[in-house]
Every structure is written in structure tokens, then in C-alpha cells.
Image: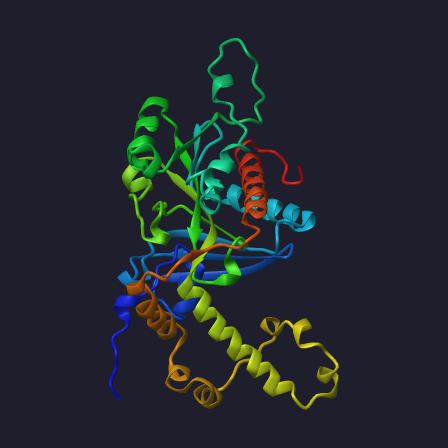
Length: 346
């Protein structure tokens, strides 16, 4: 059989969790998973340089997967979990209470899926101006914090890296907290995941528009980066739909003769919650040669088909305006709690 080299069609993702899903075993990586308050926490430590196709720098990564934050109960749980993880990172990075922080909100406030960073800035408690006024008694629970949204190259004409370096030179922060929208290769993670890392961030990398890495290596001060995947590409949607179809048929095959299942409406069964899948033979019967391909090979093949004709579109959920507002509130509040030593319960 003729073999096609699909390695050049590797799909780019910002999330370490997507990488873990795609490659089951990787040398130099430690993975730990935990369930807390309806959220799943995946802690990953990349100990050394990994193969180029994984495209991840050494460092610590924490991914928090949660339910819909438009629900107030879930929102409070996510704030508590995110606050705790951010405090853990601050301690891990040896950042002292006396150190000044600059919060950077990357993204374009004119494009809703890319507006998480600027909207988070609107929720940050800024104290730098108070620290600079003499004679004012300051609350010791608060840190010296400034905040800025640099916009994007397409609207300012200035590279994000240049703007941030200029602000660092003028204001001399001791460390940065950077927030940005990300891209994922999983529908499940869109607007339901926050990634935290000390390995830095590359604005626009998830949509193929990298503007330059923002990290300790390029800026000279510690960088704590947070990101939320708000978009997926058409490749992800099509490939995930094929996998969902396999799960759906697998569930139906396993339950076709159960009387209890026949009473349920097909639209009321969440087959994704079931540990089912089709076997290789059934996949082959359903989709022929395509049924023999692995998940990554299916994604690479769809990428090869859609990209030349310009149909690998970036897609976001229809309720994105409302969700982005809630996500920005969650992230902003968690950052405030962590930086200013406030209680997670507030």
C-alpha cells in the first residue's frame, strides 16, 4: 500500500493538554491529574527539550478544565481553583510580596474571541499609582500592580514585543502576568479551559500569526502566562465530528438489544460520557480506508484537503460574547486574589 507522509501537516495547538492527548508517551515529561470542585487539573512539567513536532518549551504547565462558567456555581468553583493554582505558581517562581507586577492583556478588543486579554485588564485591581504617592498609608495586603493592553500589530502598527519592552524599561516591573486567547485542537476545551505556564507565550501562534515569544528569555524578567482557548479550526471540527460519530455508533452497537435503552430518546443520550468506541473492523466498514487512520492522521489529512482552498476557517461558539465576559471576570478575579493576597472565597 502506498504511504503518504502526513508529518508536514501537523496541526498547531497552544495547549499542552492537546499535545498529551496526541502523543501518549513522551520522554522528559511528568504528568499529574487531579479532580477539584468539578474541575480537572492537569499538571505537566517538561523537564528537557522535547521533539520539535511537540513544539513545547521546558517549564511547568497547569491546565484547568471546567464546566460552563456562565453558571454562577461553576464560576465560583473555577475562581477558587484558579486562584489556588496561581498562588502556587507565584510561590514556585519565587516571586516575593514586595515585587512589582505588570499585567498584560494581549489580543484585539474589536474581535470578540480575541478580546479575553483586554477584557481581563478591565477587571484588574491596579495599585501602582497609589504606591507612588507619598504620605499615603497603604494596605499591606495589596501588591504594586499596573496593567496594560497593547492591542495588536494590525491596529497599532507596532510589534507587541516592542511595546512591552518599552513599558518594562519605563516602569521597571519585577515580573509579568500575561493573558491571551489561545487555539485548541479539541472542541471540548473551547471556553472551558485555562492554561497557566512559566514557559512564556507566543501571541497569535495558535492561528499561525506568531508575533514573537514573550518569556524570561526574551524579556529578562519572570513571565506567568494564562490563556483560554476561544477558537478551533475547521480541521478540528471535522475530525472531532468523525470521532464523535465513531463513539455514537459504538454506543448504539453496544446497547441496541437493551430494552432500557430503547425507551430513551436518541437526542437525550450523551454518548461522549460513555467509555465506548467502535472496533477497527467496524470503523473500516463504515468509512473504508479512512477508518484505518489514527486520530492524528485523520486531522492531518483533513488539513491537507481544506488548507489549499482556504476553507480551514477559525470558528468560535455563537454565544461567545456572553462567555468571554464571564471568562474575563473569572480570570481577572483570580489574578486579583493571587496578587493581592485576598481570600479565594471573595
